[in-house]
Image 1: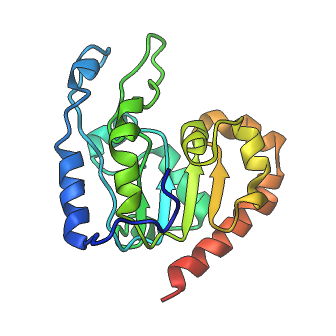
Image 2: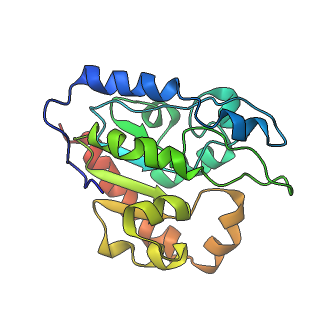
Length: 210
């Protein structure tokens, strides 16, 4: 696994742009997506440039993001921007913030109407290459179990978030910012009282520096 700051020799802006175009053209999961209830075609949501200082690692786009073609264009995104203390203009500045989920496409719904998990083939195919194309990342936000597991090793989300001081200020594990985490956040008020203010302060410093 590549660590933050690792990059292959000769990585250029053009190389990152070519990689982004390659991902955008990916259709590996077309048969699997066609077999879901939504019967949709792949639409990779690619949002990174090699100048990014911040990496936001989520799970996979939902249906709203699939339709919009931009990451976190949904209520989860509104909540996430509130957690980070960023307005939309700052959040969608690709020169400074990269949004690289564990899978670039909406995976479809299961029989209960819930989002399917990110197809592992996506991270296996692209993730190391994308991280290598982001040599300037200084702060990583991990959202949910799939991102936490890939970056920090498999462990319960609650345990990883509770241990945030062990990985800060470089890596910040968080629950996914969906409505499903609301009850958990109410039971753990230290997230709002301690973790998020520290994250916002560190993020502001990283974005302001240079």
